[in-house]
Amino acid sequence: MRDVAATLTVATPGDRDIVLTRVFDAPRHLMFAAFTRPDLLTRWYGARGWHLTGCEVDLRVGGRWRFVSRGPDGAEMTQRGVYLEVSPPERLISTALRRPVVSG
Image (cartoon, rainbow, N blue to C red; front, side, top):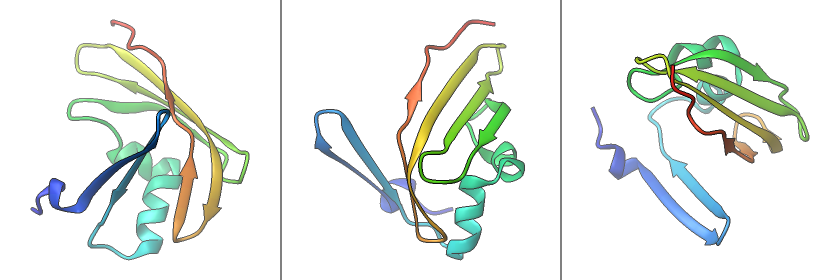
């Protein structure tokens, strides 16, 4: 397994922006699909012990996404955003907001 730190860069170009860039050893079209198809997102997305219980993706510029995750103790977290750029299979830019975790 590769060291995540070796493939991840984090930049803060503004006081309200965080840009994460990560390199994966996989074809671009498969990576794009993994980040945009609900059937694939529900198979891997989430911190250790968390899994998606809701996954909505409207994959177009201006389209919205919404993920609901449940943790091992039943806690629930909602994340949502708007797609700003969709350029398959090279680039996917969106906003991201996270609601506080609600205890289960």
